[in-house]
Length: 206
Image (cartoon, rainbow, N blue to C red):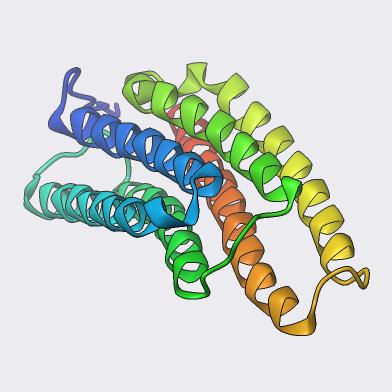
């Protein structure tokens, strides 16, 4: 007989919930940065980088908890992967902000805000899902909706690239904006990676 040890209220669920909340905070900072006037962007970039450090701290706390725990609610490898994928989301958003600030980008194309809107939806879904990992088999809607959002993000990304290379921007500006757009697309991919790990956990727990 196999006994499943899934401690309800485990510190793991609290740590993943904290990571999810930090992602939600980070995407709001990203939105604020994109719509802010240039003179406010330095301060917002600092706050975003602080959020990235908070994400790193959450990741390290999860890994430390896995390493010192005799029993874990799910496979250790899945816990490591989930922590890493959550961290990737904030890393890419922080990189997008840092690059935009470094390049002194003026006004963003409208499609960038569309990217941020989709990231915001994914962030809310992810933050809501993390406390529910205690019963991962009930999270089917989460990974389905995240996958749908990622498909939408792919379309926005393609449209943005078409706009950038359509002749309306100077070559140097194209290169700068493309770097930012690619980081935002990578953030959308990272959300899908999070959903894939949750799906894997759910399958193993079913």
